[in-house]
Image 1 (cartoon, rainbow, N blue to C red):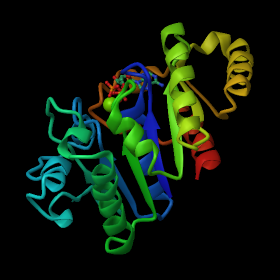
Image 2 (tube, protein in one colour):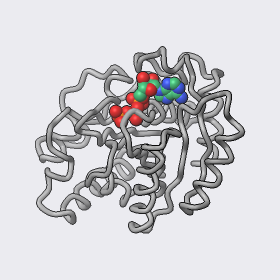
Image 3 (cartoon, rainbow, N blue to C red):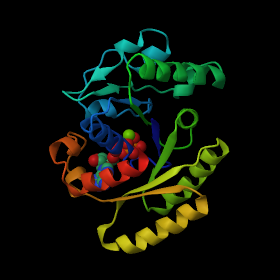
Length: 240
Ligand SMILES: Nc1ncnc2c1ncn2[C@@H]1O[C@H](COP(=O)(O)OP(=O)(O)OP(=O)(O)O)[C@@H](O)[C@H]1O
Ligand SMILES: [Mg+2]
């Protein structure tokens, strides 16, 4: 399955979620690849502590082969394609949107047919931009991760509308929600996703354990029974 993760504002928890979800799915026996498409602010390589040479960028520029950019994580069947930070949008590496689609589809094809990946997870750049929309257009399920901040909620509304135009019904997930207002938040989420026509995946509360990890460790490996992991497992069941 091809899954992408988007947000309107930055810092809603996409990279953390994609990394831990990848670990969870791989621990469940699947062969999983995580692709960092957030070329303006890549983070997956930090989370997995990857010392990379070639990245998604060099592959898209035709400077290396797919096998050069796939890095294995530990003993799991979990593979990472990192990105090198650059100032251009991912889509600027292509002359036309059609070429962008063709090249990214080509990579997906290799990962599925040659590497036999069961799941490919895309960590996308925040905001409304071409590369995020390009990825959204390629996947089976696109998820928008929002906080309950009104700036974020308003942007999520716009992003979800864009997904609709692309013919994708967005999945919606709230992260970093306050623990003490869970019931009220659930009602607001339900109401909001109904209005959007989005599929509500649920929410993950603010977790001190995750916040204090400072992206230096994956809680799904470190403490798989923690609150964050328990909530992520429930979301993964709905998603996959
Ligand atoms: N449920 C949570 N509770 C507490 N902290 C969290 C939670 N989820 C993520 N974080 C923390 O929030 C910070 C931002 O998370 P992350 O880098 O995953 O966001 P992002 O959406 O990928 O950001 P960007 O848009 O900049 O790429 C990190 O320090 C992470 O540990
Ligand atoms: Mg990120």
